[in-house]
Length: 316
Length: 316
Image (tube, rainbow over all chains, first blue to last red; front, side, top):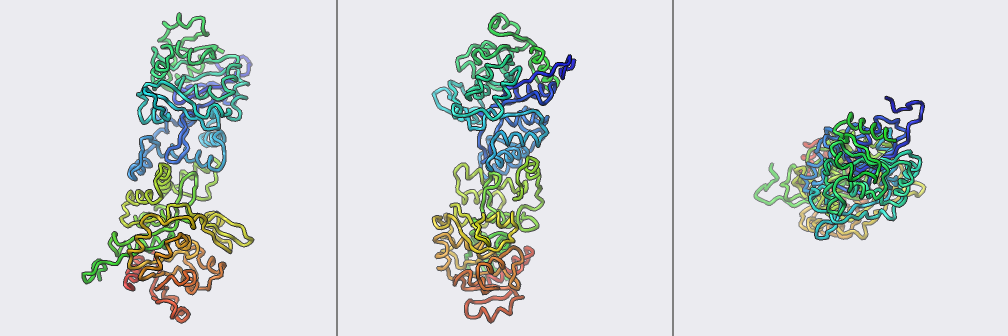
């Protein structure tokens, strides 16, 4: 069954709100089953950082690499990348706990060079996507700096990558802050894309860590609220995220367990929630709060991403 | 004839004042014939720039690469380097007129990462030298930013690399400025090394463009003036530099032609001047103004660099 112009109807315009690996795979699936001109991806920039002097945007790059089909085996970085630059940095006595592959470094160099000559992050992202042959529109949520800060037990505030990469996201997260979000504007085109969309899909990304920093930017949440359909895809399987600390962060922030916590994290934003076939027992708890859809939401490969994307589009 | 402890005497401590390629070759020659603990090289930083967001120090790297024996065929960059990063930058629509090889980029990344975490340029240079196995002490003239600015006919002031690389050093240079030099301090160890030296050698670098920005830093020129011997090695052959615009710049700045211009550029700083065998006819003009030494000063390869270094040391 073709989704591209099925029964003569124009394909629906979709905006995906995305964090890193899970969002990137959802994006790739949607890109597989939708014409590229009806899909836009709005990506979290709260994890962005300067490393080795370079402007690094982990989630944007994960989305671009995955859309280009060149992502690394763990979902981030570039497949087959080498680490000779990190070895050289390490030989020179520098801290290389935050590792970037040689090819990945070039992406960050392109971004840094563009920003240094006065381009915006949006413009740099367009250039990077074009160089990789990505046809889907990929937007940073904002061109302004937004820094996700994580409070851990004891009250210490950490930079996101300190919490996530350096400390291995083992700490209990007691609070979150998105520094700069309040005064940030959505990147050009983001609100327009959301307002023109028949559906906004919230990717199976970490709700507090990856999606909240997007929703914290004034104008984005309200644009999503006005969309005809807002479909959340759960990141949980039996109450646990397959990758990353979503379930632990949600718990330590006081959200309910399981998909009730996902619903709560989005505070009434979702018209629809897609959960995994293994979590059918949550049906009764969730009934009446949201249109519930139950399917296989695992995305180990492109075929499963495309299948999940088709399931999501069938909802609409 | 061994210079290392000849006749039981300790080898003389030598400081070389260096620009890029010519200075780097002189440094390599001196390093070949002197123990590494008696040679220091003080390098121009007036050409330093930010490119692609990275902190680039062209002369420091040329000296380090040449001392490590890994310099490129034209004297700068790294032998056998590739340019895939520049290709990627170019594909992304960025200006890559100032080209940096892939391996060379890593050097600049190491420097940038070190500066970004608060190290000085001196400290970054020590780390880079150590990673390359360079045993000779290599100092930036200063850790402070010094920017060589070039006025061309018509009065326009250009950044050094705009003049040198982008416009191909074809413009007539009517004036020079070394922004930041007046308030800069010599890098730690520079004045101490010069003060402890039996001889300061001024490399066959471009006097106005490469050596003046070193001499412009308060404390360096006076330390050199106090040295027992100050030996200049001419960059000219028949009044013309083998590489680069030294003779044209000297002329348009109003200096006399030939080695009289080199002497004038250093305003009485030199006790000795080494000129090329081909320029013996200048002997009469220069006589009485400086101790003159005539030898083959070309350095196409390591053997000739070492031979010239031996000739210079024999003067002392």
